[in-house]
Image (cartoon, rainbow, N blue to C red; front, side, top):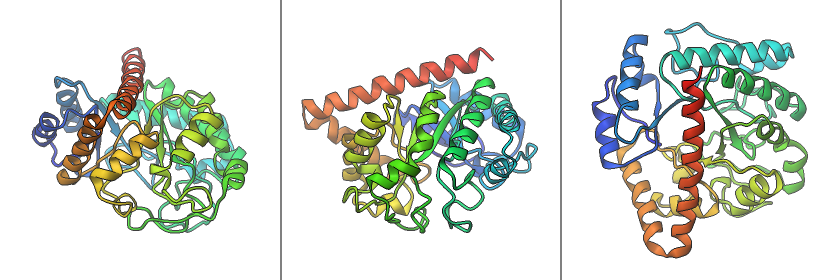
Length: 318
């Protein structure tokens, strides 16, 4: 899934011609007015590869459409109100805003626990410090977004709240072990999965007590915790590969291949065309490597194809 530059479709269509991605993601740099966004998304959606259009639309803290649509309550405010009907109505309103613009997928809700009020990456983005409260709020938001015909993404697995640094500019470490992750951080994902969340996004965070590899590249975390322990069968997407937390794992090309073999299905590259080219080369290398790697990629393609079908069908029936 690719990010791009500009307010029209010229750059994104060139990138999609070079890299046959399954989706694109919008940022503030792509959003000037509501008619412009609708026109851009219509042109992207009409392209040969029929990609999904996604956005980060969480509320006041992370809102690529700020100034263009009315603000809604953010996660912290919703957690404080503890009114699940209100949270679902906020999800519905957010989803209706996105649906009207031709956006199929919202990278929300955030399931990270609020372990520190002034977390550099998560301030204002978390529902609560209590896993049960997070689970209930997230499920309500998912219901609302789905009612509006918009897809959802739970993030950042297995949890970023206990890692005090910002993965945009660092590779954070968390002290959590398997037991503490199981008793706290991953609990909301059980409810999100039961609520038919469409996608799960990884955290560019290291958990040394669990694995030497960061979560994005950890088979023990992705296949072990998420798929086997929690029973999740849908697609897994990385957080942005432009982030320093991903770049510090190793060369982009090799890290992408490692992430796929660990359980990732979608590589998210939000801006840098060189990173996008390296990521695509990593996928090509993996496909050429052998039958096991090819089978792994083909399994991801089936998961992603099924998700796209579900999202587009839901989007078209609202």
